[in-house]
Amino acid sequence: MVNTLSHLGIGLLIASAAGLNNRQVRIVAFMAILPDLDFILSALLLAIDQDLTHQSYNTFFYLMGHREFMHSVLFALIVTAYIGFKEKDLKLTIASGAALFSHIYLDYVTSWKMRPFFPFVTEASTIGAIDFFDPVVTIISFIPIIYILAEHARSNRNNGFTGIKRFNGFLKDSNNWFHGISTGKHRTLYRNLLIVFTIWCLLNPVAKAVLINHVENTDGVDVDYQDSYPISPGRFLSAYSYNDTHYRVFTFSYWEGIEKETFVPKYPDNKSEYTDYIQRTRILYEGSLPGEVDYPVYNVSASDTDITVTLSDARNIYAQYWAYFNTEYVFIFDKDTESYQVYLKRHGQNGKSVPMNLFE
Image (cartoon, rainbow, N blue to C red; front, side, top):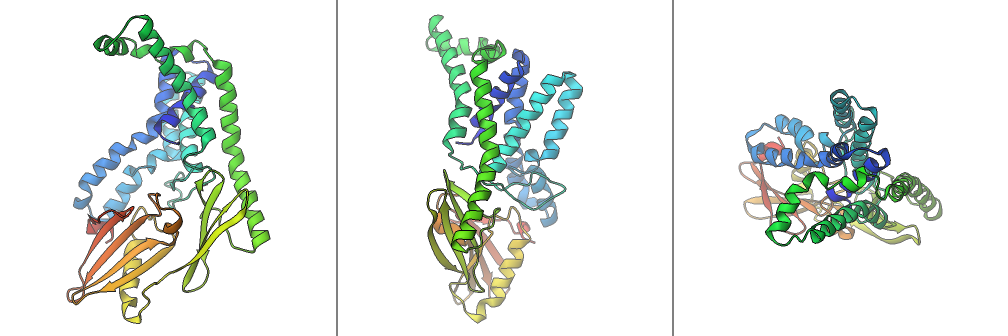
């Protein structure tokens, strides 16, 4: 599972391969998880978003949103340059930069859309070649952490620590958590794991390209690399606009090629009197961030006073647990005043009101 612990584990492998001392190992370990600290900025943005103008919100989102600026190449270069200036140690600087770039690349090569080349490219993208629950990445990244925890537990047991003494031992021993790496323990194993990890992460994007080319040639379908997401190890979800009224949504894998497919209507409640509301919803959404919906489906319902347009992604049916695909925006337009409200629904939960400045 690709999470903060996974990034920490890869950082420890890099520190081990570089042969750093105890203090330097802690610096590299921190660099490996630093980009995920943007959740603090993201929480702050969420707290003030209702007080911002639409343009201000979009600007701050690029800088403060999760997996935004702090997951960019520019951010990594700035931090790496600072480490080099501050520490004046080439080996530590390279290891710190490698830890930062490994974090950004690992997120980019898994399932999440990002803007790694911001501010030069503001369009979100992903390589999307490795599943979030990839067993190879998970096992490799967790091995150094498991060793550290096991050695720390063994040290506590040998010192007879129990209860509050164990906690005190943790505090006193906090500077020695990475001692095994700084002294070269398991270094050969860690270097080999880092090599396997690197090859795996570089090979999968190539393998995905080969698979897509094979599916296109054998089944005669259009498969976009960017819009093909891993939904389980070795299996991808893709879609494209089949015609003016439907999307074609399908899954394919390394073992079977295309496995399942269906056609999803773009306008399930296609009535001409709703066209203006659908168009207004489209314009409002396209001006907002983060822009999770790539293949918009518009469901429309009406009452005596309101028109409700529910915007979802055509791929929802095959990706029920994804943050991106299982998102719905519910626009409720007042027929008389033309004012509107927006609610955000994720994974079928009750809608949460969204500030209007997110859209205009």
